Length: 184
Image (tube, rainbow, N blue to C red):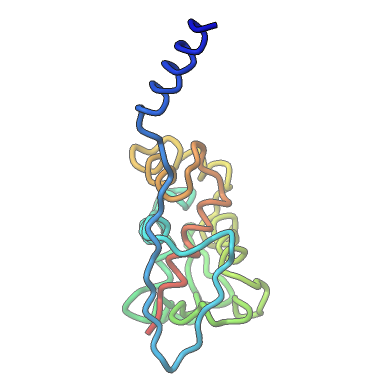
């Protein structure tokens, strides 16, 4: 009996001495002007330093398009309020859509998104451009495969969401976190 107690204590001591692989996120401090109300942030997608930084990188990432030529930032141009100054936005195949990319500044307060109000939140809206045949013209499976095979993205997603496999849900969460920070 004494042997088993010593063995258990030894095992517990060794387990306690090993560093824990904790998942710690740094909250993102969003400074909202006093003239604006607070934003609603989904409980399942809080603003974190890791998530916002990853979202910013993905927003500028051409791997999200089928031919690697276009990112979200290609149409949502920072110098024009993250909008497209052209009447119609042009996708990867040179096709023009029937509208332009709307401004993303202060988008966190919009009750609906897209010119027709077809999306109710940033996460839902971010799914659309990747699979749109006029915009980025890819599939989410293909985009996920490209991001999972990338040298940096698996580690960045692990740091932001504690996941081992990148899928579309986490891509749009990161992009939505970044877009919520675009305040004028």
